[in-house]
Structures are given as structure tokens and as C-alpha cells.
Length: 450
Image (cartoon, rainbow, N blue to C red; front, side, top):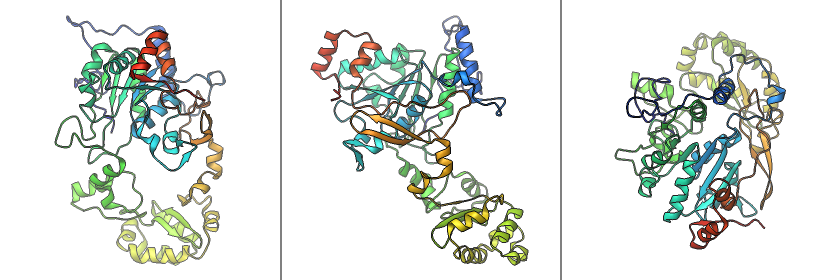
């Protein structure tokens, strides 16, 4: 989980989360924002917090992205970190992905399926990045990472707490050479928190940094930097297990929220409801003649509408089902009646009958149905790219649309070390002979695209 806890705990700043580094004597180390920075912050702020949502995109701004010029040094692997930095890349940031020479990111070996020799898993979360292959255990490799941090704006990592500090790449090490940087740590999830990455928070950090709030240090929750579980790794399935999610659901749940509150306030233990809801009836999937449909009646009027569509007017008038409280109390009998009726028609027929009713509903789609859905096609949620070895690939694009720019022209996920020489030259100014020596000693590696 990416933490919102920052370097200082003073009550000043934005919501008490922000502080400025102070030089001796009380002077701030941050320079006043330049006109360009103020302009960029204003433009970017309007993207995140639009005052008038009715405004459409400005035609002249379609190619201007809010994070253009921001450099992200990405030391993350697997899913949470790469997914976060990929989204930052979609917003225009230059993402430098640091990988092990040879093997690279763990997910490069996760499969099948593969497209050619490339893992589809890796391809799904690593577009819009450049890859530099560095042996971090080599002192010269670690030195290169510090040099990259000094010229980057954001440092993102998801190693076990303490691992990077052992090789001089922890927060305390990096802040000495890059006091301006946003240092973000992502770890396994806390027992009560999902392993979701709050991307808008990262974006806000960078926008605020643009107006020269100098340093944000995230103290990652996950199992945390301290405590009895600090050395444990965390994946989504582990988070679901320790957080109690697997105890309460068979298939679907978004977060504990009301389930946790039920226990904390009323000592009501969570149950496994499958697709159903513990406090709302009907609110679940129903088997149809040829598939499933999910229907949710969030209030009494919607329940009356459901009964009308199902041609069950007598059910809506039954005193046992007049209110949601009564429907929850008499769940089994009501669901049996509704299930019998839903099984009499096909999914497509029910979709036609519910269209325009005002009741939330939808089919349970398989992948083929998802990506042929008219709404998915309309929203342009698929991204096509030409990969150097896999050829044409297609991945899901971001599920967000912005008013002033388009997420377009994505770069394909990189090969391991595909951009090593380019980054050493372009970002750090290394000469050819120095690069050759680094390659020869194994401190770095370059993938040659054939």
C-alpha cells in the first residue's frame, strides 16, 4: 500500500501533510515559484480539480500532458508499483524503469501466456517506460542509481523495508543527494487496507512539487517500516486473506467499509454473501436461462420497479417485502421467488426489459463480451502498440478521461535494458568509453534489439 504519511508530522501545509525543509535560521530551502511553475500548477490543478465539469477539452491542448517533463525513477517490480508508474507515464512523465540485467522484472517470467517470448502479464503494466539494466549489488551500479535520483523528480520503490538502505539507496541516503525528490515506497498491504495505489495522491504530490514544496517522504504502511511483520512480502491474495476479505466473500467485494463497521460497532461478524449484499435485498447476481444478470434495488421504489419488470406485482405489495429492512429479514423467500422468475428468460431479454428502468443492472460478461461491449468500444479503452519483438500488442488503457489532453500514442513496454546506453548518455552525460567499461564489468547491461 502506498502511504500518505509524509516526512514531517506538523499540522501546517496542505491538510497537515506537507512541510518545507528549513535552512538554519528558519529560511526555507525552497525558492519562490517561478511564473512558469505557477502556470503549470494552475493548469495541472484545473485538470485534477475542474470547477466546471461541463467544459470540454480545449482543442489546442490535446497534446499537452500534465506531467510532461517530470522524471520518475522506477525501482518497482511485479504489479502495484509498475501499475502506478505506468499511469504516471500515461500522464506524460518520463519513467526510467530500473531492472536486473538478464532476468529483469519478475513478471517477465510469469506465464503462459506469452506473445513470442514476452510475458503478457509484464506487457500489461509497463507501457510508456524506458528500461535501464543495472546490477544494484555492484557498487558502481548503485552509484548510477544515486546519480539518476539526483536528476529525477520522483523515486518509487517496492522493496522489503530496509533492503535499499543496505546498499545506500534508502530514503535517508537519497534525500542527501536529492533533497527535492518525492520518495515513494510501496509495500504489502496492512491487514485492513487494500493493496491499491492512490494514484491521484501521487499526482497531487508532483503538482505541489511543481510550485516548489520541496520534499515529500512517504512512510509506507503495508506491513510497514517497523513491527513484527515488517519483513513479510505482500500480494493481493495475501492482503485479501489477512484483511478478512476471503472470510466474507466468495467472489466480489470492493472493500471492508460497512462490513468492518458492522463488526466494530455491533459485533456482527462478516459472512460470505457471494455476489449478494448483507444489507440490501435484492442486490446480487441471478441465473438466467443462458447466463447471469446482476440487479440491485437500492431503495423501495426500485424494488417496485423490479417486481413490475418481472411481472410480479403481488410481490411488491406483500407486507413481508415492503421495506428494505423487511426484505433483508425475509431474504431467502424473496430471492427464491425472484430467482425462479429470472431463470425463465435469457440474459439479453432481461437486459431489454430493464433498459431505461432506472434500476442498476448489467450482465456478467466474459472477456470476449467485455471487449466487444459497445460502451468499451465507444470509450476507446484499448491501446495498440508495436513491440520490438512481440509485434502488435493490445492492452487495456486507463479507465480515466481528461478534459484537456488525450492519453494517446503509447510507447510499448521495453525490453530489459533496452535504453541503458541512451539513459547513461542522455541523462547522466556518460562518455562512450565509460559506458563500455560499465558494460564490460557487468554493472549495467544493454539489450540489443534485432
